[in-house]
View 1 (tube, rainbow, N blue to C red):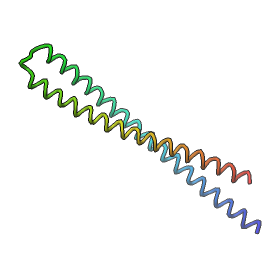
View 2 (cartoon, rainbow, N blue to C red; view 1 turned 45 degrees about the horizontal axis):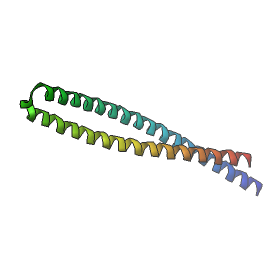
View 3 (cartoon, rainbow, N blue to C red; view 1 turned 90 degrees about the horizontal axis):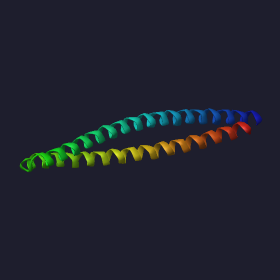
Length: 117
């Protein structure tokens, strides 16, 4: 019976180690996704800033170029919309990362507890 308990503990420990490794891998993947999303947001922000700068320059240069300014304004709105979507995705990935981190901590505690027993 003691051997059965020991075998069960060993199996549980192995399972927890596997789950911990999977959680760590998932966290790394989420961190990579987060870095990619942050880079995209920065690029979108730079495009947005460029578009805003272009809009201001056009407005100051000529009132007759309103068609072009309107097109740039629409592009800015699209970029803002895309930026908002990227920010939402980033927030979701951050929530997933925090959840994975919490799971990893829980699994680590469970693994530590199972080792003590």
